[in-house]
Image 1 (tube, rainbow, N blue to C red):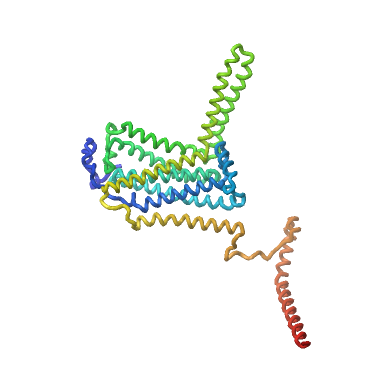
Image 2 (cartoon, helix red, strand yellow):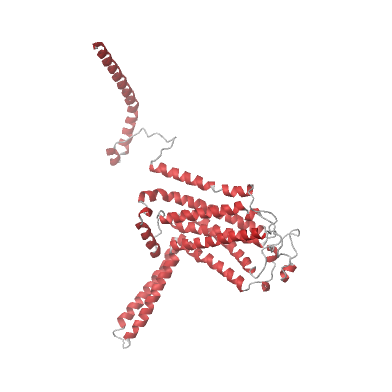
Length: 436
């Protein structure tokens, strides 16, 4: 990634290790990266997605979350709580609503996160480490919120390959770009200033970087990425999920159980049979640990909790970075002013309200609670229940045709009967008046 002659800086002093050109110097503000509207929109979308995800989990709205011992235990506890126990009718009503709203929030996070990452890489010649770090935290928020929605909707996405594949593709692209950012952030952990230009950072030779602190930070973030990302991919592909369950769960468990049975059968006939108790106990312990670890890795509930933890870490680091740079007074102008570029990201959140109202109205129409204003009238053709059961198409069409022909006549007869009854009532009233 090379810079133009106009953008290229003299980084020799910084690379030499003096850092004199950056410590305490003013930092050029960049509202397009760290503006108050950008940060507010990211945080609001993320918090809303997390709240809906936990709400669907607590009220057991989303199906398919109890195929794991830990998840089944959590679901069992939640169903025992009276106000959290959702009826089948309510669950059937709210499941499509929650799915569509979560997908909308997830798509917003993917699009804005990728846009922010691409902008960060394109502006590496003009931004400093502070804004590069803000972009990293925003991308971290987006990726973990997207992972949370995938955990909640893994059964929904597994049945819809087209929706699953392109979301997974963009998530992989985002995580790869974020991992490259981790590499550069780890290189700056040995005392460099937040005002260091990123183009100077990228010109650093390898012997100037990778002290223990930088390596620890990079490994920490890489571990945080891979912890939930790999199980998330496995859950989205049912054949891969079955393969991993067979080879990494069922077969090891069966082999250890068979080994325990062989040792039990031989301990009575072998001269040192009593000593077989030691390997039997050891294998039992290993089998139990293997079962616990596999349950933890496959648990959707624990994956959501881990994603929430990393989301909170990224949100706190983001807010701390913005607050510390504001307190230092090193920004040449404020990044808290509300302009067009800050209002638009917040207004994009309105699309979530529109999606919710649209899906909610559709569900009301499907359940018959409301009727569309321009709904089609009921069909004039009608077949009797006996004919519908018989399945005789010709008779059904004949009866429908006869009814269609008779219907206008029936309407006229009904009108005529009503008029005759009205005339009769008027004559009866007039006779009573005459008698009086």
